[in-house]
Length: 463
Ligand code: ARG
Image (cartoon, rainbow, N blue to C red):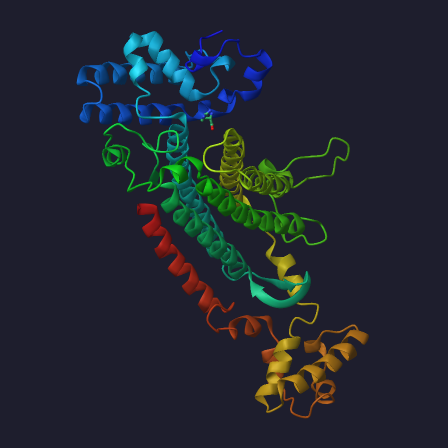
Protein backbone atom coordinates (compact mmCIF):
# COMPACT_ATOMS: atom_id res chain seq x y z
CA UNK A 1 0.00 0.00 0.00
CA UNK A 2 1.38 3.40 -0.97
CA UNK A 3 1.86 6.13 1.61
CA UNK A 4 -0.63 8.96 1.48
CA UNK A 5 0.27 12.56 0.81
CA UNK A 6 -2.22 13.91 3.33
CA UNK A 7 -1.94 11.64 6.38
CA UNK A 8 0.12 13.92 8.65
CA UNK A 9 -2.67 14.44 11.15
CA UNK A 10 -3.98 10.88 11.10
CA UNK A 11 -3.12 8.35 13.77
CA UNK A 12 -4.92 5.37 12.22
CA UNK A 13 -4.58 3.80 8.81
CA UNK A 14 -7.51 4.31 6.45
CA UNK A 15 -9.87 1.34 6.46
CA UNK A 16 -9.54 -0.69 3.24
CA UNK A 17 -13.24 -0.38 2.67
CA UNK A 18 -13.01 3.40 2.93
CA UNK A 19 -10.13 3.42 0.45
CA UNK A 20 -12.21 1.48 -2.02
CA UNK A 21 -15.27 3.59 -1.36
CA UNK A 22 -13.58 6.95 -1.78
CA UNK A 23 -11.26 6.00 -4.62
CA UNK A 24 -12.06 7.40 -8.04
CA UNK A 25 -8.98 6.24 -9.89
CA UNK A 26 -10.86 3.71 -12.04
CA UNK A 27 -12.89 6.60 -13.40
CA UNK A 28 -10.59 9.62 -13.38
CA UNK A 29 -7.47 7.98 -14.79
CA UNK A 30 -8.93 9.09 -18.10
CA UNK A 31 -7.83 12.61 -17.14
CA UNK A 32 -4.11 11.81 -16.78
CA UNK A 33 -2.80 13.70 -19.80
CA UNK A 34 -4.72 16.84 -18.82
CA UNK A 35 -3.57 16.52 -15.23
CA UNK A 36 0.04 16.36 -16.39
CA UNK A 37 -0.37 19.23 -18.84
CA UNK A 38 -1.96 21.34 -16.09
CA UNK A 39 0.83 20.46 -13.66
CA UNK A 40 3.49 21.42 -16.20
CA UNK A 41 1.85 24.80 -16.73
CA UNK A 42 1.60 25.23 -12.96
CA UNK A 43 5.34 24.46 -12.59
CA UNK A 44 6.26 26.96 -15.27
CA UNK A 45 4.22 29.61 -13.50
CA UNK A 46 5.77 28.79 -10.11
CA UNK A 47 9.21 29.28 -11.65
CA UNK A 48 8.26 32.45 -13.51
CA UNK A 49 6.99 34.02 -10.30
CA UNK A 50 10.08 32.74 -8.41
CA UNK A 51 7.93 30.70 -6.05
CA UNK A 52 10.20 27.77 -6.96
CA UNK A 53 13.57 27.82 -8.75
CA UNK A 54 13.95 27.28 -12.50
CA UNK A 55 16.04 24.24 -11.72
CA UNK A 56 13.34 22.66 -9.56
CA UNK A 57 10.74 23.42 -12.19
CA UNK A 58 12.84 21.73 -14.88
CA UNK A 59 13.21 18.51 -12.95
CA UNK A 60 9.49 18.48 -12.09
CA UNK A 61 8.55 19.04 -15.74
CA UNK A 62 10.95 16.37 -16.91
CA UNK A 63 9.59 13.90 -14.36
CA UNK A 64 6.01 14.67 -15.39
CA UNK A 65 6.97 13.96 -19.00
CA UNK A 66 8.38 10.57 -18.03
CA UNK A 67 5.18 9.71 -16.12
CA UNK A 68 3.05 10.72 -19.08
CA UNK A 69 4.97 8.30 -21.28
CA UNK A 70 4.67 5.54 -18.67
CA UNK A 71 0.90 5.91 -18.57
CA UNK A 72 0.71 6.21 -22.39
CA UNK A 73 2.55 2.89 -22.65
CA UNK A 74 0.32 1.22 -20.06
CA UNK A 75 3.39 0.89 -17.85
CA UNK A 76 1.97 2.52 -14.73
CA UNK A 77 0.78 0.91 -11.53
CA UNK A 78 -2.62 2.14 -10.35
CA UNK A 79 -3.45 1.62 -6.69
CA UNK A 80 -6.82 2.32 -5.05
CA UNK A 81 -5.19 3.50 -1.85
CA UNK A 82 -3.93 6.53 -3.82
CA UNK A 83 -7.50 7.73 -4.38
CA UNK A 84 -7.38 9.60 -7.64
CA UNK A 85 -5.29 10.49 -10.67
CA UNK A 86 -3.86 13.62 -9.03
CA UNK A 87 -2.44 11.65 -6.09
CA UNK A 88 -1.13 8.93 -8.38
CA UNK A 89 0.85 11.33 -10.50
CA UNK A 90 2.19 13.30 -7.56
CA UNK A 91 3.21 10.16 -5.69
CA UNK A 92 4.93 8.77 -8.77
CA UNK A 93 6.72 12.09 -9.27
CA UNK A 94 8.18 11.82 -5.77
CA UNK A 95 9.42 8.31 -6.65
CA UNK A 96 10.92 9.62 -9.88
CA UNK A 97 12.54 12.93 -8.95
CA UNK A 98 12.67 12.77 -5.16
CA UNK A 99 11.90 15.42 -2.59
CA UNK A 100 11.66 18.29 -5.04
CA UNK A 101 8.37 16.78 -6.22
CA UNK A 102 6.86 17.82 -2.91
CA UNK A 103 6.96 21.40 -4.24
CA UNK A 104 4.56 20.69 -7.11
CA UNK A 105 1.45 21.23 -5.06
CA UNK A 106 2.51 24.71 -3.84
CA UNK A 107 -0.30 27.26 -4.35
CA UNK A 108 -2.65 24.60 -5.59
CA UNK A 109 -5.32 22.26 -4.26
CA UNK A 110 -6.92 19.21 -5.77
CA UNK A 111 -10.10 21.24 -5.82
CA UNK A 112 -8.90 23.68 -8.45
CA UNK A 113 -6.76 20.99 -10.06
CA UNK A 114 -9.67 18.65 -10.79
CA UNK A 115 -11.76 21.55 -12.08
CA UNK A 116 -8.94 22.42 -14.48
CA UNK A 117 -8.50 18.83 -15.67
CA UNK A 118 -12.18 18.33 -16.39
CA UNK A 119 -12.44 21.65 -18.20
CA UNK A 120 -9.49 20.75 -20.44
CA UNK A 121 -10.91 17.29 -21.10
CA UNK A 122 -14.40 18.58 -21.83
CA UNK A 123 -13.16 21.36 -24.07
CA UNK A 124 -11.57 18.75 -26.30
CA UNK A 125 -14.58 16.43 -26.20
CA UNK A 126 -16.96 19.28 -26.98
CA UNK A 127 -14.95 20.27 -30.04
CA UNK A 128 -14.91 16.65 -31.11
CA UNK A 129 -18.70 16.40 -30.62
CA UNK A 130 -19.19 19.44 -32.83
CA UNK A 131 -16.97 17.82 -35.48
CA UNK A 132 -19.00 14.63 -35.29
CA UNK A 133 -22.20 16.61 -35.64
CA UNK A 134 -20.89 18.39 -38.72
CA UNK A 135 -19.92 15.04 -40.26
CA UNK A 136 -23.33 13.65 -39.44
CA UNK A 137 -25.05 16.66 -40.98
CA UNK A 138 -22.99 16.12 -44.11
CA UNK A 139 -24.23 12.53 -44.28
CA UNK A 140 -27.82 13.73 -43.87
CA UNK A 141 -27.42 16.30 -46.65
CA UNK A 142 -25.90 13.67 -48.96
CA UNK A 143 -28.81 11.34 -48.31
CA UNK A 144 -31.26 14.17 -48.99
CA UNK A 145 -29.48 14.88 -52.28
CA UNK A 146 -29.54 11.24 -53.33
CA UNK A 147 -33.28 11.05 -52.71
CA UNK A 148 -34.07 14.63 -53.56
CA UNK A 149 -37.43 14.01 -55.26
CA UNK A 150 -38.69 10.96 -53.35
CA UNK A 151 -42.11 11.64 -51.87
CA UNK A 152 -43.68 10.15 -48.79
CA UNK A 153 -46.62 10.95 -46.56
CA UNK A 154 -45.82 13.51 -43.91
CA UNK A 155 -47.43 12.62 -40.57
CA UNK A 156 -49.03 14.42 -37.68
CA UNK A 157 -50.33 12.32 -34.77
CA UNK A 158 -48.73 9.45 -36.70
CA UNK A 159 -51.62 9.78 -39.13
CA UNK A 160 -50.94 10.56 -42.76
CA UNK A 161 -51.23 14.31 -43.23
CA UNK A 162 -49.77 15.80 -46.40
CA UNK A 163 -47.22 14.70 -48.99
CA UNK A 164 -43.65 15.81 -48.38
CA UNK A 165 -40.29 15.22 -49.94
CA UNK A 166 -38.07 12.74 -48.14
CA UNK A 167 -35.28 15.25 -48.65
CA UNK A 168 -37.32 17.86 -46.77
CA UNK A 169 -37.94 15.40 -43.96
CA UNK A 170 -34.22 14.61 -43.75
CA UNK A 171 -33.35 18.30 -43.76
CA UNK A 172 -35.55 18.69 -40.68
CA UNK A 173 -32.93 16.57 -38.89
CA UNK A 174 -30.21 18.72 -40.38
CA UNK A 175 -31.81 21.69 -38.60
CA UNK A 176 -31.99 19.84 -35.29
CA UNK A 177 -28.35 18.85 -35.41
CA UNK A 178 -27.40 22.42 -36.39
CA UNK A 179 -29.02 23.65 -33.21
CA UNK A 180 -27.21 20.93 -31.27
CA UNK A 181 -23.85 21.99 -32.69
CA UNK A 182 -24.71 25.59 -31.76
CA UNK A 183 -25.55 24.54 -28.21
CA UNK A 184 -22.26 22.69 -27.79
CA UNK A 185 -20.33 25.65 -29.21
CA UNK A 186 -22.10 27.98 -26.81
CA UNK A 187 -21.41 25.68 -23.90
CA UNK A 188 -17.73 25.77 -24.84
CA UNK A 189 -17.57 29.45 -23.82
CA UNK A 190 -18.37 28.50 -20.23
CA UNK A 191 -16.14 25.43 -20.24
CA UNK A 192 -13.20 27.48 -21.44
CA UNK A 193 -12.53 29.30 -18.16
CA UNK A 194 -9.32 28.64 -16.22
CA UNK A 195 -9.91 27.82 -12.52
CA UNK A 196 -6.36 27.03 -11.34
CA UNK A 197 -5.10 29.39 -8.66
CA UNK A 198 -8.38 29.30 -6.77
CA UNK A 199 -6.59 26.75 -4.57
CA UNK A 200 -8.79 25.05 -1.96
CA UNK A 201 -11.50 27.73 -2.12
CA UNK A 202 -10.16 31.11 -1.02
CA UNK A 203 -7.26 31.76 -3.36
CA UNK A 204 -3.64 31.67 -2.25
CA UNK A 205 -1.06 33.78 -0.41
CA UNK A 206 1.60 33.14 -3.08
CA UNK A 207 2.23 35.74 -5.80
CA UNK A 208 0.90 33.49 -8.56
CA UNK A 209 0.22 34.56 -12.17
CA UNK A 210 -3.05 33.02 -13.26
CA UNK A 211 -3.11 34.80 -16.60
CA UNK A 212 0.19 33.18 -17.46
CA UNK A 213 -1.19 29.70 -16.76
CA UNK A 214 -4.26 30.54 -18.83
CA UNK A 215 -2.07 31.60 -21.74
CA UNK A 216 0.02 28.42 -21.62
CA UNK A 217 -3.09 26.26 -21.52
CA UNK A 218 -4.92 28.30 -24.13
CA UNK A 219 -7.79 29.52 -21.96
CA UNK A 220 -9.27 32.86 -23.07
CA UNK A 221 -10.52 33.63 -19.57
CA UNK A 222 -9.62 33.16 -15.90
CA UNK A 223 -12.32 32.40 -13.31
CA UNK A 224 -13.23 35.50 -11.29
CA UNK A 225 -14.24 33.99 -7.96
CA UNK A 226 -12.24 31.27 -6.21
CA UNK A 227 -15.25 29.88 -4.33
CA UNK A 228 -17.29 29.59 -7.49
CA UNK A 229 -14.36 28.15 -9.42
CA UNK A 230 -13.99 25.10 -7.16
CA UNK A 231 -17.71 24.51 -6.70
CA UNK A 232 -18.97 25.14 -10.22
CA UNK A 233 -20.09 22.19 -12.29
CA UNK A 234 -22.54 24.17 -14.44
CA UNK A 235 -20.34 23.64 -17.46
CA UNK A 236 -20.76 19.86 -17.12
CA UNK A 237 -24.49 20.19 -16.55
CA UNK A 238 -24.69 22.35 -19.68
CA UNK A 239 -22.82 19.77 -21.69
CA UNK A 240 -25.10 17.01 -20.37
CA UNK A 241 -28.16 19.12 -21.23
CA UNK A 242 -26.92 19.74 -24.76
CA UNK A 243 -26.12 16.03 -25.04
CA UNK A 244 -29.60 15.10 -23.78
CA UNK A 245 -31.27 17.30 -26.38
CA UNK A 246 -29.02 15.89 -29.07
CA UNK A 247 -29.92 12.37 -27.95
CA UNK A 248 -33.62 13.30 -28.19
CA UNK A 249 -33.00 14.06 -31.85
CA UNK A 250 -31.06 10.86 -32.41
CA UNK A 251 -33.77 8.93 -30.62
CA UNK A 252 -36.57 10.44 -32.71
CA UNK A 253 -34.63 9.60 -35.84
CA UNK A 254 -34.12 6.07 -34.50
CA UNK A 255 -37.81 5.69 -33.84
CA UNK A 256 -38.55 6.59 -37.46
CA UNK A 257 -35.91 4.22 -38.78
CA UNK A 258 -37.43 1.44 -36.69
CA UNK A 259 -40.96 2.26 -37.76
CA UNK A 260 -40.10 2.77 -41.41
CA UNK A 261 -38.17 -0.49 -41.64
CA UNK A 262 -41.13 -2.48 -40.27
CA UNK A 263 -43.00 -4.59 -42.82
CA UNK A 264 -46.09 -2.45 -42.12
CA UNK A 265 -44.32 0.64 -43.45
CA UNK A 266 -41.60 -0.87 -45.63
CA UNK A 267 -40.26 2.59 -46.46
CA UNK A 268 -36.62 1.74 -45.85
CA UNK A 269 -34.31 -1.18 -45.37
CA UNK A 270 -31.38 -1.07 -42.99
CA UNK A 271 -28.11 -2.42 -44.37
CA UNK A 272 -27.51 -6.08 -43.44
CA UNK A 273 -24.20 -5.08 -41.90
CA UNK A 274 -26.06 -2.88 -39.41
CA UNK A 275 -28.91 -5.22 -38.50
CA UNK A 276 -29.07 -8.38 -36.44
CA UNK A 277 -31.02 -11.60 -36.59
CA UNK A 278 -33.14 -13.44 -34.09
CA UNK A 279 -31.85 -16.55 -32.37
CA UNK A 280 -35.22 -18.29 -32.83
CA UNK A 281 -37.04 -16.68 -35.78
CA UNK A 282 -35.03 -17.21 -38.97
CA UNK A 283 -36.96 -14.61 -40.99
CA UNK A 284 -36.12 -11.70 -38.69
CA UNK A 285 -33.89 -8.76 -39.43
CA UNK A 286 -33.94 -6.50 -36.43
CA UNK A 287 -33.13 -2.78 -36.22
CA UNK A 288 -30.97 -3.19 -33.10
CA UNK A 289 -28.71 -0.24 -33.85
CA UNK A 290 -31.49 2.38 -33.85
CA UNK A 291 -33.15 0.58 -30.95
CA UNK A 292 -29.98 0.86 -28.89
CA UNK A 293 -29.49 4.51 -29.82
CA UNK A 294 -33.07 5.08 -28.63
CA UNK A 295 -32.37 3.06 -25.49
CA UNK A 296 -29.09 4.75 -24.65
CA UNK A 297 -30.90 8.09 -24.75
CA UNK A 298 -32.40 7.17 -21.39
CA UNK A 299 -28.94 6.71 -19.92
CA UNK A 300 -27.86 10.17 -21.07
CA UNK A 301 -30.97 11.74 -19.49
CA UNK A 302 -30.07 9.76 -16.38
CA UNK A 303 -26.57 11.25 -16.34
CA UNK A 304 -28.01 14.76 -16.53
CA UNK A 305 -30.53 14.14 -13.75
CA UNK A 306 -27.87 12.40 -11.72
CA UNK A 307 -25.52 15.40 -11.76
CA UNK A 308 -28.31 17.91 -11.20
CA UNK A 309 -29.29 15.90 -8.16
CA UNK A 310 -25.72 15.65 -6.89
CA UNK A 311 -25.34 19.43 -7.09
CA UNK A 312 -28.72 20.66 -5.92
CA UNK A 313 -28.12 20.82 -2.18
CA UNK A 314 -24.39 21.27 -1.96
CA UNK A 315 -23.27 24.13 0.24
CA UNK A 316 -20.36 26.14 -1.17
CA UNK A 317 -17.68 25.35 -1.95
CA UNK A 318 -16.14 21.97 -2.90
CA UNK A 319 -17.77 18.82 -1.52
CA UNK A 320 -16.64 15.28 -2.18
CA UNK A 321 -20.05 14.50 -3.67
CA UNK A 322 -18.78 16.34 -6.72
CA UNK A 323 -16.39 13.50 -7.50
CA UNK A 324 -19.46 11.70 -8.87
CA UNK A 325 -19.62 14.22 -11.73
CA UNK A 326 -17.12 12.30 -13.82
CA UNK A 327 -19.06 9.03 -13.92
CA UNK A 328 -22.00 10.87 -15.44
CA UNK A 329 -19.89 12.98 -17.77
CA UNK A 330 -17.72 10.19 -19.16
CA UNK A 331 -20.69 7.92 -19.68
CA UNK A 332 -22.49 10.59 -21.70
CA UNK A 333 -19.41 11.51 -23.74
CA UNK A 334 -18.94 7.83 -24.63
CA UNK A 335 -22.58 7.21 -25.51
CA UNK A 336 -22.96 10.35 -27.59
CA UNK A 337 -19.73 9.74 -29.51
CA UNK A 338 -20.59 6.11 -30.16
CA UNK A 339 -24.12 6.92 -31.34
CA UNK A 340 -22.97 9.68 -33.69
CA UNK A 341 -20.18 7.51 -35.09
CA UNK A 342 -22.42 4.55 -35.82
CA UNK A 343 -25.05 6.75 -37.51
CA UNK A 344 -22.40 8.49 -39.61
CA UNK A 345 -21.43 5.06 -40.87
CA UNK A 346 -24.89 3.55 -41.18
CA UNK A 347 -26.99 6.29 -42.73
CA UNK A 348 -25.31 6.39 -46.16
CA UNK A 349 -26.11 2.67 -46.51
CA UNK A 350 -29.81 3.08 -45.94
CA UNK A 351 -31.96 1.63 -48.73
CA UNK A 352 -34.93 3.79 -49.58
CA UNK A 353 -38.00 2.10 -51.00
CA UNK A 354 -39.20 4.89 -53.24
CA UNK A 355 -42.17 2.88 -54.56
CA UNK A 356 -43.51 2.05 -51.10
CA UNK A 357 -43.31 5.69 -50.10
CA UNK A 358 -44.97 6.80 -53.32
CA UNK A 359 -47.67 4.18 -52.87
CA UNK A 360 -48.38 5.29 -49.30
CA UNK A 361 -48.63 8.88 -50.50
CA UNK A 362 -51.36 8.12 -53.00
CA UNK A 363 -53.88 6.90 -50.44
CA UNK A 364 -55.37 8.36 -47.29
CA UNK A 365 -56.81 11.64 -48.60
CA UNK A 366 -53.52 13.47 -48.40
CA UNK A 367 -54.87 16.01 -50.89
CA UNK A 368 -57.85 17.10 -48.76
CA UNK A 369 -56.15 20.35 -47.66
CA UNK A 370 -55.30 21.12 -51.26
CA UNK A 371 -58.91 20.69 -52.26
CA UNK A 372 -59.95 23.09 -49.50
CA UNK A 373 -57.27 25.58 -50.60
CA UNK A 374 -58.61 25.25 -54.16
CA UNK A 375 -62.09 26.21 -52.98
CA UNK A 376 -60.62 29.22 -51.16
CA UNK A 377 -59.10 30.40 -54.46
CA UNK A 378 -62.63 30.20 -55.84
CA UNK A 379 -63.83 32.62 -53.17
CA UNK A 380 -65.00 30.30 -50.41
CA UNK A 381 -63.98 31.03 -46.79
CA UNK A 382 -61.48 28.45 -45.52
CA UNK A 383 -63.68 27.10 -42.73
CA UNK A 384 -66.54 26.58 -45.18
CA UNK A 385 -64.18 24.91 -47.64
CA UNK A 386 -62.92 22.67 -44.84
CA UNK A 387 -66.48 21.49 -44.10
CA UNK A 388 -67.20 20.96 -47.76
CA UNK A 389 -64.08 18.80 -48.29
CA UNK A 390 -64.87 16.91 -45.10
CA UNK A 391 -68.14 15.83 -46.67
CA UNK A 392 -66.35 14.88 -49.88
CA UNK A 393 -63.89 12.75 -47.89
CA UNK A 394 -66.73 10.95 -46.11
CA UNK A 395 -68.42 10.32 -49.44
CA UNK A 396 -65.25 9.08 -51.18
CA UNK A 397 -64.31 6.94 -48.21
CA UNK A 398 -67.71 5.26 -48.42
CA UNK A 399 -67.09 4.54 -52.08
CA UNK A 400 -63.59 3.26 -51.26
CA UNK A 401 -62.11 5.94 -53.48
CA UNK A 402 -59.65 8.80 -53.12
CA UNK A 403 -60.75 12.40 -53.76
CA UNK A 404 -58.98 12.55 -57.12
CA UNK A 405 -60.70 9.32 -58.15
CA UNK A 406 -64.15 10.93 -57.94
CA UNK A 407 -65.65 12.23 -61.18
CA UNK A 408 -65.97 15.95 -61.79
CA UNK A 409 -69.72 15.52 -61.46
CA UNK A 410 -69.35 13.88 -58.05
CA UNK A 411 -66.96 16.61 -56.90
CA UNK A 412 -69.28 19.32 -58.14
CA UNK A 413 -72.04 17.96 -55.95
CA UNK A 414 -70.01 19.31 -52.97
CA UNK A 415 -69.44 22.73 -54.52
CA UNK A 416 -70.46 24.23 -57.81
CA UNK A 417 -67.15 26.17 -57.76
CA UNK A 418 -65.21 23.04 -58.65
CA UNK A 419 -63.88 22.86 -62.22
CA UNK A 420 -61.78 20.24 -63.94
CA UNK A 421 -58.60 22.19 -63.11
CA UNK A 422 -58.94 20.69 -59.63
CA UNK A 423 -57.49 17.39 -60.77
CA UNK A 424 -54.15 19.01 -61.45
CA UNK A 425 -54.18 20.61 -58.00
CA UNK A 426 -54.78 17.22 -56.40
CA UNK A 427 -51.66 15.54 -57.87
CA UNK A 428 -48.72 14.75 -55.60
CA UNK A 429 -46.42 16.82 -57.75
CA UNK A 430 -48.56 19.92 -57.34
CA UNK A 431 -49.15 19.30 -53.66
CA UNK A 432 -45.41 19.30 -53.11
CA UNK A 433 -44.36 22.04 -55.46
CA UNK A 434 -47.07 24.53 -54.67
CA UNK A 435 -45.89 24.56 -51.05
CA UNK A 436 -43.21 27.06 -51.81
CA UNK A 437 -43.71 29.30 -48.78
CA UNK A 438 -40.31 29.77 -47.16
CA UNK A 439 -39.40 26.58 -45.30
CA UNK A 440 -42.05 24.54 -47.14
CA UNK A 441 -41.53 21.24 -48.94
CA UNK A 442 -41.44 22.48 -52.59
CA UNK A 443 -38.51 20.93 -54.47
CA UNK A 444 -37.13 24.38 -55.23
CA UNK A 445 -37.04 25.23 -51.52
CA UNK A 446 -35.42 21.97 -50.52
CA UNK A 447 -32.73 22.41 -53.17
CA UNK A 448 -32.02 25.89 -51.83
CA UNK A 449 -31.90 24.58 -48.26
CA UNK A 450 -29.46 21.86 -49.31
CA UNK A 451 -27.36 24.44 -51.10
CA UNK A 452 -27.18 26.65 -48.03
CA UNK A 453 -26.42 23.67 -45.83
CA UNK A 454 -23.55 22.64 -48.08
CA UNK A 455 -22.08 26.13 -47.91
CA UNK A 456 -22.38 26.22 -44.11
CA UNK A 457 -20.87 22.78 -43.76
CA UNK A 458 -17.95 23.65 -46.04
CA UNK A 459 -17.12 26.60 -43.77
CA UNK A 460 -17.46 24.42 -40.66
CA UNK A 461 -15.35 21.63 -42.14
CA UNK A 462 -12.54 24.12 -42.76
CA UNK A 463 -12.77 25.61 -39.27
N1 ARG B 1 -11.06 13.08 -6.83
C1 ARG B 1 -11.55 14.33 -6.40
C2 ARG B 1 -12.73 14.74 -7.32
O1 ARG B 1 -12.83 14.22 -8.35
C3 ARG B 1 -10.49 15.39 -6.49
C4 ARG B 1 -10.68 16.51 -5.55
C5 ARG B 1 -10.49 16.04 -4.16
N2 ARG B 1 -10.52 17.07 -3.20
C6 ARG B 1 -10.56 16.86 -1.91
N3 ARG B 1 -10.61 17.89 -1.15
N4 ARG B 1 -10.65 15.64 -1.39
O2 ARG B 1 -13.53 15.59 -6.95
